[in-house]
Length: 336
Image (tube, rainbow, N blue to C red; front, side, top):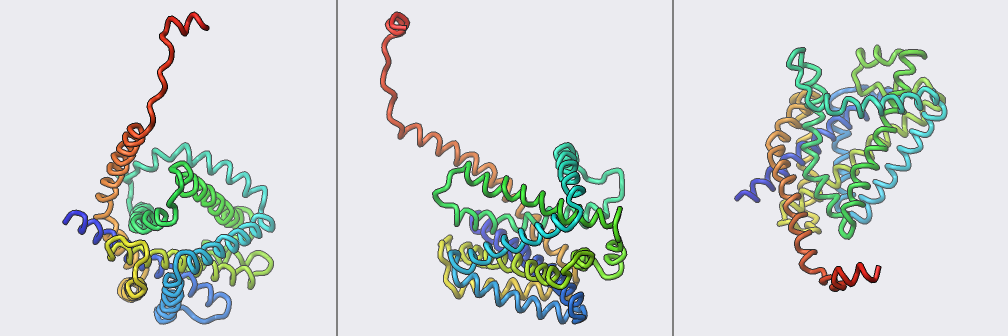
């Protein structure tokens, strides 16, 4: 019963984490389409975008890990790198480099302090709408991200796993935030500005496109940004559908296509319901509610991993051949 409960919590967290991603992605794509072609913004358009994204990630998931998922992930990296390189070269390059160095130092210096921040002596509104939301969102992604990465990492060492899953993605994230955020900060502090006003008037989803408008090739870079956002969420949601299929099929590595399709449809439908009922606030609330119970499971996972590693170490020591006996100490010293 405990194992079944953990599986159920993992599926629920994954389902609502995926739905939150689809909802936020649809809102940003909607803003981008309206920015480029004046399509307008509204719930109906966002629902249509979710339907298209759901169809695409279901097709990708059904094709398997080695085909659709891998192809989209590789395409994702190429487009993201191209967009970052464009802003790094055309944008305020020196300012970006200085920002990276200083921000990395601030991050390392404040990591422990900020990890324990609870806003006990100040208004916790920002902490709740930003820090706790993103914390809960990533907790809700934890079960499927962990299972999926384990699914594609068989045969790798723990060292390779940590480098490939923790260090390299963190480095890429530092670069992404520095180039995107640094370029936006430079615009507000020393350049054209107007980003804060655009966000206040049209919402946070427009910020990326308002920034790209300040540089050459706006139509091309904005289209690439829309494409990138779509591929990001498709490549995440297709992996989530596969993992939910695995968790609901006794852990099989190749869940039936019908099961994968079912979970994909449910994820898309959940995103639509949350968007209609509560918009961004509804997406945030659902993510936090789904993630809270799984936090207890994650603590247990940490303990279980430690125990499993100790058992593996003990097993390896028993299987290792005994070392050959050396000469007595006196003979060894004499020979030396």
